[in-house]
Image (tube, rainbow, N blue to C red; front, top):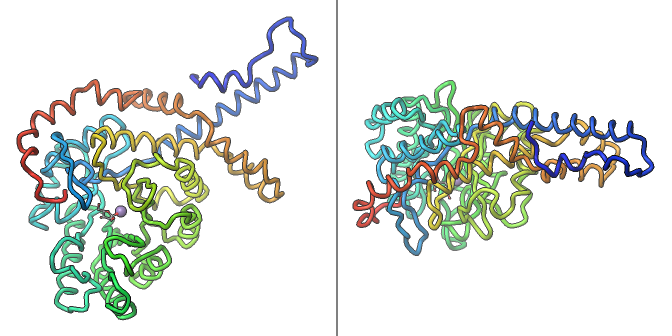
Length: 429
Ligand code: PSV
Ligand code: MN
């Protein structure tokens, strides 16, 4: 077994001949206990890594930008073929990303007519279509909202797009349709918050009725942006209520970047799990607003705590979709995606280390410091050697980032896509 040096040192025998007043049998006991603990940690990590599948976003491989402009990357993907190829490369390096989330407007501009092409790409690359994301925010018609727009004609257009998205998901055998509404208003009094709730409820009920038996409607909330006064679906409470009203196949999607500062996201996760309403995550990190930074780059402890809540619920892994939602403007997109998947695996492995049975006892007995230390044991445990061992035993590169660099993949796609990318800035993704 290969464990990090620091853990072995913790349980090392004393230097022979140097007496510290302890019998050798005491050291043996500690040494054996230490080894047992390490072996339990290792088993938990291996099991956890086997169970973690992370979905990549097609838009994460494309040139995207801020509202101030784009900084182009010459290797960025522009076609759906390129997005699948890039996703397949990440999957080959990490072994953990078998699906690709698709945004209908960017990836299936021909709607259902493009489904066969996607199925062919999935067969060629080994990466399946993942969640289907309708686009209710880019059309000029949606200036005052989509399914919450006061104009019934525009609401109809938005609902039809949602129904088309469900049909696309059926054709692609995708379980999840992820709905994010940019709807809202910028000034008090300019829209009826209450009537818009009713329009939203009507629309989502109609869309829910069209879902297949195995399909789900994931409802994503966001407190602000693009709307700056009120957002129709602003937080997890609103998302929970509207999803409940839509029907039993609707649940909530938690985008980690979509919260006010100081909000306790793991508590939201715990509630949604209790209510059996957690459908999935959009992973990213942020310092200020919806910054699209790399998962765990700002606050890895929070991601760890979210994973700890998930692992405290025995059914969560089967029902939760783990998806990345990051558009990198400065980092290389391929590198950033591989780095994100590795970070998710490491933080998930750390959460797996927590001895939750012991933690429950300590919590019941209100042994506060011991309970906190029991949790922190996972966070501070260096999981990287076991994660590497897991990768090697599954035929994967031990260091996916180094393997990406060594593969020459980024250089190759840069030279293939360079000419086209230099002069194309038209679309968002
Ligand atoms: C909105 O900020 C969001 O999180 C939604 O999930 C969109 O589909 C995605 O970002 C687009 O980048
Ligand atoms: Mn999102």
